[in-house]
Length: 291
Image (cartoon, rainbow, N blue to C red; front, side):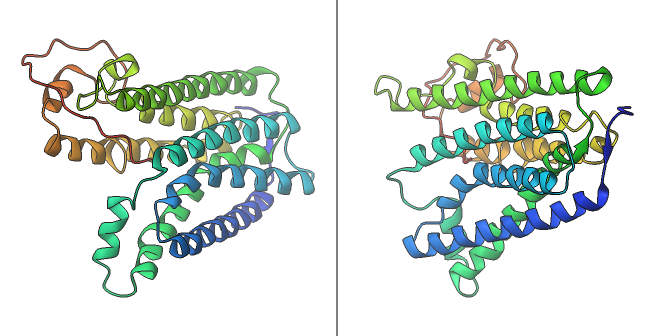
């Protein structure tokens, strides 16, 4: 598969170490800023740009070493920057004027020692590790030599762009629709079942998963891409069962009347036509996604 493509594993290993160091610096600086301003929710804003840092560092190292294909590198950097920047702007606007995130406040309140140091170990370091692991396909893709313009490499590259585009659209439109819905006094206190939210309870998380499968496909023109297939898989599982949909719905079930009926008729992740609900009840508010 992709015989025209090659990969310098030594250069990739160096890139992985440098990217890990860069991410540690970014998240440590973010932690210091959060301690100074007294609000750790700022770490959520850094999630998207953290991937941009990895893509940029990877491209710079690959170019310095004479590795990789310029077209593929620009594509990876461009798509990652577009996604990460949009997400950062969205989260920053959503969190503006709010207090500390309840998730982080609970960790601070239960800290056995210095709260800030405890949160650094519980939140900042794990996010650094997860981001680095999920970003491995980006690092692989920018170090692969050989143009993705023929045969299998071209096919998976085009497929990757298409999957990324679907995901970016779902995530962007879903977030925009939820922001408009929750800001409208006429719909305040109701569950959003309009637009994309009629077909999936988490169109933004579905879009996020597609983005990462699309970026992984950019590395799948060479067999080395198969080595990092666990990265988008782990991200998808987290969005479905971990800090994404599952965490959001746990709060919604316990605090929002009418959410059970919404669950009955609406797909939990993959978009599809809604089922006919067996019961009807007044619908109440829908919380924004934590990320």
